[in-house]
Amino acid sequence: MADQIPPTKASAKLLDYVGLGLVLMLMPIEAIGPDFINQKQISTEEWLRAGFLVFCGLVPLAVGIWWENVKPGSGGVRLAPLEAIARNPLTWLIVTGVIVLGVPAAIGRTSPTTFAGLIIAFAVMVGLMWVFFRPVAAPVSVQKEAQPAAAAEKTETAISADALYVGNMHASTTSLAAEFFIDIEIRAFNGTGTAVAVTELQGSIKTGPNVALPPPRIKEEVFRVRSIQRAAEFYVTLEQHIPRAIAERMAQAIDAGDSVGMELNDLNIFVSPTDNHNQKVRLPLWNGITIRKYQDYIVTGRIIQASGRIGR
Image (cartoon, rainbow, N blue to C red; front, side, top):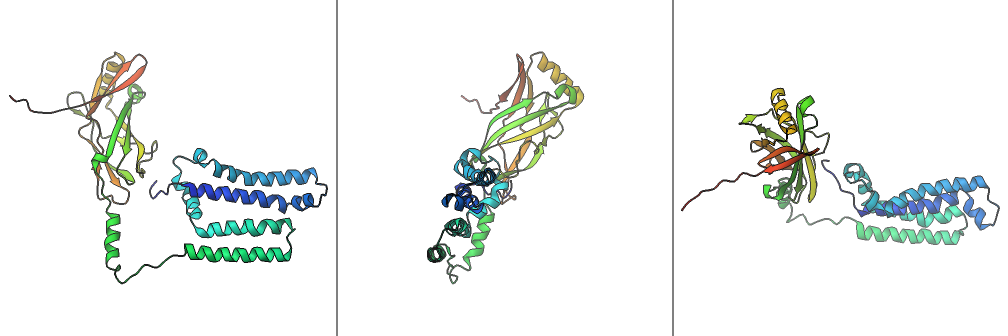
């Protein structure tokens, strides 16, 4: 998800107008338009062929209209080329030209004078788009020395650990007794104002009387953590392997209804801006979790550690 361009309404509008253009163009190209205008008999084969081609235009038209309901939630990478095309004024120039000039030409009912007028109108539209969308050169006499500093500032995005939040943690013991590992799902929120990535994991989880377990693994095949958009919820899943003897004791205790604790203070999951991996902050994990069985469900609780001074 790195360098992801989030899809916006520009893509929806492009699909909307492309679909409309195809609907208007494809049926006349199949000669059903002129035949209909000339009141000629249209065969069933022509209707079916034209209907199929019009359906090809209705698909992008429908996707554009109901974009908010059908767009992929995490498809920014796949939709980035479409978004780049939709943001280009030249694309809209071509689409508009095809609709304005192509439909009358396809029907074949436009007189040369009318068609010449359409070409002139299209040329005027090209000129207006050039005036409004052409790039404007910035003054260079004063800005030359300031540009490197601005570029350096852009690549040095800073984030604060206070803008990261862990809302919930859940442990799955499905594979504890047989395969000797558990999954811990961390539900967090990125409030830093910029895209971030989970870049590093250090330390370990402790259980029992100060027993350090092997370092866990981030299961990136479950949730993508290399580019998390700003103001977005994200998940990190840890796979924690447990020595067999400890795993069997934990499984027995949980099955008996007892609570098993796991300490997370020595586990560090680091988050960095996607454009500045030199800066990293620790994801504020819970101090620890408890795992117990309630009826047929595994319940994960939160351990909160506090320290203070008691005085007179």
